[in-house]
Length: 21
View 1 (cartoon, rainbow, N blue to C red):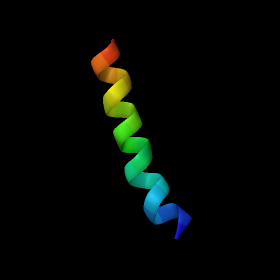
View 2: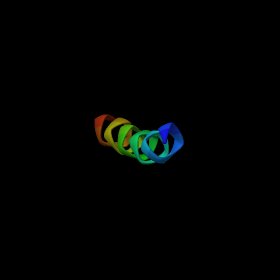
View 3: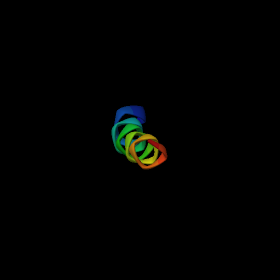
């Protein structure tokens, strides 16, 4: 269950970091 939530969450965080840069 954790992996199903963690994978999309990491992708969302990565997108946010790219926007900040």
